[in-house]
Length: 313
Ligand SMILES: O=C(O)CCC(=O)C(=O)O
Image (cartoon, rainbow, N blue to C red; front, side, top):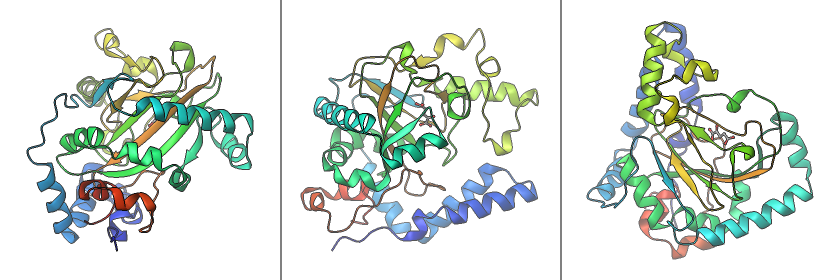
């Protein structure tokens, strides 16, 4: 029987509490996150060790650098099949809006999850692709540890003209580092509201610049910035927009790279987002799903792949 990692590794409650307390006492968010990470790792040294040891000596030909890596539809085996499958799911869901979708739409009309959390369990092809060696080796090398597949979402951004929340520049705050693999499921142009991001060094530079001018309170960032605060004549040319044919996309460290998306779409955009986190991440993806230990796919996976799915060996 496969054993799942203990629930305190998955729980966001401790982090939320520590962050709340550190806000009250004026301690920084980095301190709060370091504390929670230390707690999780301290109670599970074996898991930390196994994951670190298996990451040693990995030789990835094109490692993820500066918090991102772009890819084409030809770079990963099986991308075309995943794209076709997601196109079918998206067409079916978009044409037959369910109650779930209606609920979603009320909350955040510009970015709707067509598949989210446990719903992904019904599509083992996506899980199999997400844990394929070609992908997890790259992510493992970036984290220097076998990651956790923390969530998967199939996102739909319909035409819209709103400009708020994740349509504005922001950093994700689950951890100080994480990776999202974004795969365009349809051809994406500037008119499809592509994900846009600044590489990590340019993001850090800009935040440093803002903090030195007291325009940004560094301790507790959960901010949304206007374009004119982030984009300067120097860094503007480094803004990357994920335009491209179906199957193209990028790995983006959304905790380090300032980003936004689903902005001013004239056309529908569908994106598959595969979320990887470190096993000791202070807070987990809100697309989190847990694989049942009798999940049929498990028997055909390697130890490393089982670790990625949250099992202890
Ligand atoms: O593609 C988008 O609309 C935004 C995605 C985003 O902000 C995120 O994944 O953190």
